Length: 274
Image (cartoon, rainbow, N blue to C red; front, side, top):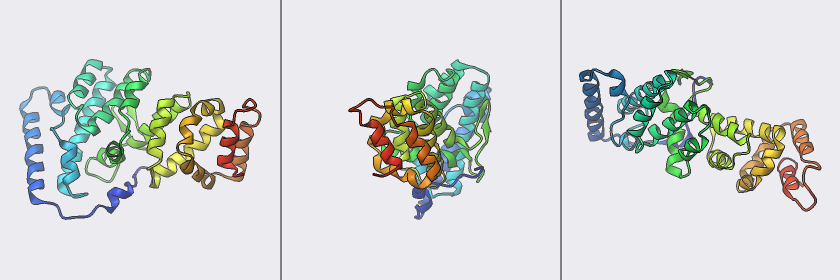
């Protein structure tokens, strides 16, 4: 999984890059470079993002020099924040992150780092930054490519933060772990992503969810009202599980619900259609 597949929308984007966009991008990013070279504190210089950077990225041609330069700017920011995290410097992390609240990529990345810095105690801060609109969801799908910083290799780590499968998978894993604790808001955000997930990311989530149903039945019962809203997408799990796995999941919900509680029957029917 070292090299992530790009979301279908990104792969399908075509068009001609406006020369003025390239010029504007280079001027903007050039000013950031000049600021960094003139500033004695290198960390504070890289721990910032130019205004409207993500909006500008959306106007650039995929895989163009302008887009690569923007992605390198994001990676410098990520490394600076992660370095402060590795040093357990909460004040520095918060200072960096307070300055990028208007940038969707910076905001989402910071939410992950601040959540980890809290020893995973402040889950609501993390989940509040996870996508709940189509635009926010599109942004997080680009997170993996942006983290490659203009290359085709996604990082397996940032200072103090392991990313064995890449940055986007780390977001998904953290939400999944919160679902295992019965966190309703985590299920809402995870399943909102799942509805739109395809390619390698979709397969990864298809692989995770049966483990939740098999290993955490009591938590699934708590979360079931959220899962019900995504019933049609969940039924696709039948194609990603073996008959043995489906029987094992179904057995977990036999006799688990009280009479009149239809949740167990509904869950079983996802894996074994009536």
